[in-house]
Image 1 (cartoon, rainbow, N blue to C red):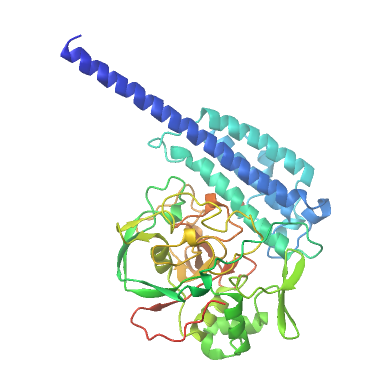
Image 2 (cartoon, helix red, strand yellow):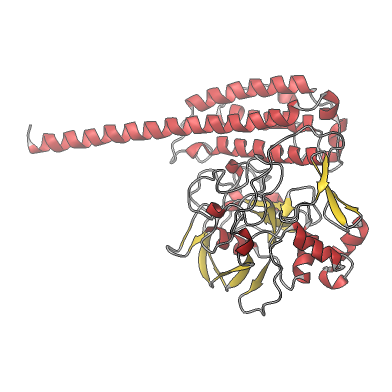
Amino acid sequence: MNQHDTSDQRASDQRASDQRASGQAESDLRARIAATLETARRRTLGLTDCLDEDGLKAQHSPLMSPLVWDLAHIGNQEELWLVRDAGGRPAIRPDLDPLYDAFQHPRADRPALPLLAPEPARAYLRQVRAQALDVLDGADLDPDGPPLLAGGFVFGMIAQHEQQHDETMLATHQLRQGPAVLDAPAPPPAPADAAALPAEVLIPAGPFTMGTSTEPWALDNERPAHTVDLPGYWLDSAPVTNAAYQEFIADGGYTDPRWWTPAGLRHREQAGLTAPLFWQRDGDTWLRRRFGRTEPVPADEPVVHVCWYEADAYARWAGRRLPTEAEWEKAARLDPATGRSRRYPWGDQDPTADHANLGQRHLQPAPAGSYPRGSAPSGARQLIGDVWEWTASDFEPYPGFTAFPYKEYSEVFFGPDYKVLRGGSFAVDPVACRGTFRNWDYPIRRQIFSGFRTARDADAPHTDAVELG
Ligand SMILES: [Fe+2]
């Protein structure tokens, strides 16, 4: 064998080894996608098998769809994107498209539609899933291929869609009257060092990379990566607790117009807000209803079910403000040691049960100061999981935004009507949660699992920061 033959041989060995590696990577990706779709489906069935036909068809709140609508809508979106679009296959149930198009029917109108009954809806989901997995088997997931399939994007998008509806269905369960049907263990108690955490952490001035151009399953509104330069600021170490929020209530925070924006004040009066949703007074104590059970409000848990106006008013009362979306993301992603933005506060590793309260493992937030292994470099905890955190920011596109794969995903929602929430809640699955993930809602909404933390400018005078409860 001469020199030339040897180098040819080496090149061909290298090609064969590259092909084996990329074949292995693609089969690992297929297995991960199938498992992710299966996780979502188990949760969907768990949230719907626990109610009878009447419970699934009923509208438990005008804010929500009947659960049986969510159920078949999950299947219909999967059919549209995985079976028809990615798979190029004929429609299974084209007659269902208009019924389950979220843009054609507001939630309040959905109970009057000729919806599939629960059993046919479940059968439809099974039929669609079987075809979707067949499409997955033959799909070309090459990261450099067409964007819909590259890195399995459309499969990831549909898994996130199902999980987001599961979160919505969990919110419907919380609104539902009647005996409890869901169960989960309580989160672990706060770690020993939680009480000694500083109330706030300093994030020094400087640029960071916001958004992503590389995360394969990131949605269009998280893209592209771009540099944002911020002045220094202080951020609460943990989300605002029920104990701290009760001080705001006890101090007359709801009735003092100094803390409310004009729009917030109008809404507070119209809606008669006096406490977080699901709270009720019992003598000197506060009780709350949580998934069909009434219990004392736990002092050290992050407050949940507050609207943006309430979060904003609390922050003003505390002499502080809500963080902007960029401030939240910088605290959650920037590694000051390398200057790089990571996927999560703790690094690039996917979340585990040690990092964050995600995936409906528990049916409530964990005490403030939990999850030391999920800390950001600044020492801030629980940026991911527990409660969605309201930010000061309107939902706007990043510079260079392009709608993908359709305008109705994000673009139609951009503008001042919606406020951004970050970080995910206990009701969010890891597949739909990362340092770049953006959620948005109206500032009056509080049936969602929403809380907040506060901030102040680094050069702003220090007021009595509210201690962790
Ligand atoms: Fe949807």
